Length: 273
Ligand code: ADP
Ligand code: MG
Image (cartoon, rainbow, N blue to C red; front, top):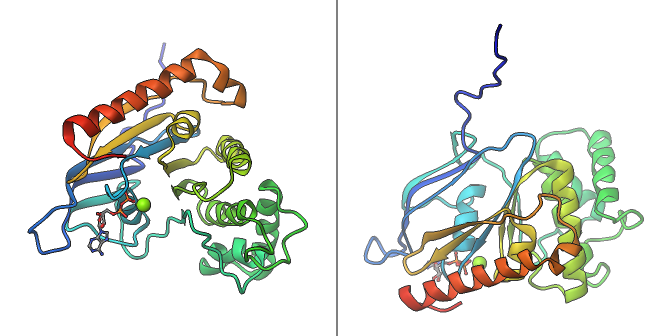
């Protein structure tokens, strides 16, 4: 009688930062030192990773490494086991609206596919599907510029563009930081919905602890300077979150736990959030 084993012998980690150090003055001072971060692959499930750290600690720099926009002074950055280089294209959603204002919503969302050489008809069809998913149907011919579109709508454009270009990894750098509270909460739920649909690996940077606990499966906390991860908190809440979870005492307890951990790091290692 045989046992059927599903084995992934050489399953590469989805993201691997190893021995990362960053200096901008030829090694006199280090902004990041000996930093490691390993995000294991969870096939068919994806994961939501949140990075928390004080401002200036290097969060945006880490996302730039993963997206291939910057190389660290020392160390290696791999995605799915392959070293990141200038040809790597993992897209990023920024706090500032990053769409091209002289292009329409449809053209912006289709941009990644255009770079990949996908023919116009196909890329427009796929872009329209994504536009529907993010709730922008009817706006596709408008220019992606404020105030023609609201802040929340512009972030929907950025998320749609990034997901269409590469649904497996999504990097988000304080993406909801500039939004009003109601829009921010709506965007959090939209993101959870999309995450459940695409099973992406999302790396999400935020200052907001309640947002981190609501969205994240795993929270990594940076100390600085120099930056290094000092805490990993697994958020043991159901994978499929709904707003009701915020009334759950477990949620409140986790928010307090993360808050205490961050205060502790700031007190013992210096710095403020
Ligand atoms: P965060 O996103 O956590 O606020 P950043 O990644 O933007 O932090 O920056 C980390 C640190 O690196 C900051 O102290 C910043 O001043 C410094 N830094 C970033 N880019 C440069 C640069 N080109 N030259 C010198 N210092 C830089
Ligand atoms: Mg930043």
